[in-house]
Image (tube, rainbow, N blue to C red; front, top):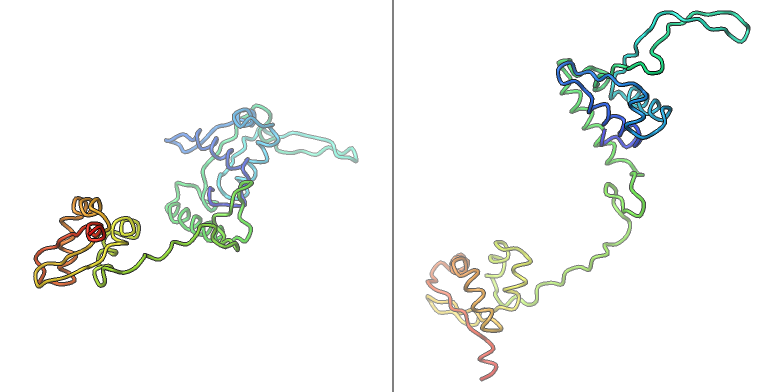
Length: 238
C-alpha cells in the first residue's frame, strides 16, 4: 500500500487502523464505522469512503452482517423487499486480502510479492510523482543542473604510479586530505622518499597509514624495503 501512488492518504490511514485490530488467531477485525471514524478523527462518511476504497483496490475484504429482509417504497409507491445489511452501530468483519485473495490461501505470499513489484514499477514509471509541497521529486530525474559544485581534480600527480594504488584503497576524501600535495622526491634500490609540505603531515601520515604505506609502495615496486617521509618545508627554508 505504501507503494500505491493511487491510494488516498485517508484510505492508507484507514488500513493502518484496521490492521491494528486484526485478531492474530482468526485474522479478522471487527470494527464499527463509528469506531473507525472516531479513531481516524474524521466523519463517518470519510471513514466509509476510505474503507470502500481499500475494498475496491483489493487490500481488504469486508463482510457486512445481514439482518433479514426489509421493505421500502419506491417513487411510484410500490413496496419492494431488500436484504438489510448491517446498520448504525453494527460491526463489519474485515479480512486482509492480496489481489482479492484471502491471506490464508497458499499463493498469498506470491500474490503479495507480485503486487509489490507491480506497484514499484508503476511508481518508477510515473511521470507525475506525488510529492510534498516545496519538496523535490525523488522518483523522477530533474531537468535542472546539479546545484552542487563539481569537485576539482586532484592537484598534481607527484606520486606517479603510486597515486592510483593509494586512491583505490582509501578513497577520494582521505586521498585529498593527506596525499594530494605529496610527491616522490627520490628513490634508491631499497628506499622510496616521499615529500610532504610540513612536518605535521609527515607525522600524521606515519601515524595513520604507516603500516599500509610500505605495502602500497611494494605494490608499485616489490624490491622496496622501506619508505622515508621528507619534510619539504625545511628544504624551502634552507
